[in-house]
Length: 453
Image (cartoon, rainbow, N blue to C red):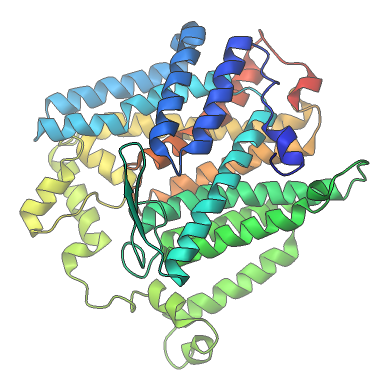
């Protein structure tokens, strides 16, 4: 039995269509298994999405958004046919084309705020073992190499790279992306629990009564592990998440505290002497030295992001329409600088250089449209029947919008979609948002207020 109220939040009997209810159950279990056992998670999700597609193929084909993604797929295929290295580009298609289908199918089965809450609980609960493994990796010297085919854990002692926890993921930055998701979800559920406690509800069991406390521990655990990934990008996204939550909830005191702490850190990192001296006595050296890059001085120019961005922009200028082909940045960069770099650490630049202007603008435009529609729904949600004027339902949509925005910002300084777990979680966010938008717009199959959960 999962803690108190969590049991009710993980129930999946609010999906009205019985076939879809079956596939929704499998989707929930797939995402529950995904972080620790990705083979089982991916297999379960594949089966579920095939089932959803069989049930909903007609509306999936009729959605203008899905047709837009189909056009992006076609443009990427053309780019592959014209690629500098076609085999590399063909392999790169698997990081995008299947996930357009994932988005289309998930958006058909997700229809209520309660389903978003179920997904938030899944991501939050699965983060607990990931956090514990990361903390053991950092403080207990824990490591494990376990490869039995369906389970492949490569938990390196001291993390990867050394000194940065990576837990069950292959690299610290990938883990940092994961914690950006789970930190936002756990923070949203914690805020919801606090608000629920303010309303007297009879018959609460001990787990429900103390839910804000143990959820608070989960939030702190996610925050601590995120810090230990030593990812400046993740630090910024976590700060962004907290600030957006504080603004949304009118917690002005928290905004003031964050502003003061952020100012002290920035002064310690970037202010000239002697201004920075007193601040550096307070702010941990690992923080301000990481921010201003003194922690890793004298890095080769080819390892710098600015060099990679300039090279990717040069690639785009040479082939602006269809690019050089997916995964072609790496061999071209290696030919130029004699060093292996997996990507240019900026998703838009990677897409511009590898797939060209047309597909990149269309893909980013479609995702921006999802964010816009979700924001509109959040603003008008109190008058919609699916919300039944429940603030907690508006809050969970807000959580997914914040997580989606944070993931988009993360990809301006890194690219972590090559891990299938991150890619599946990344596409879950816009699919969940768009599912609620579809429910609002679809005249058929509209749920009654009491079914919104």
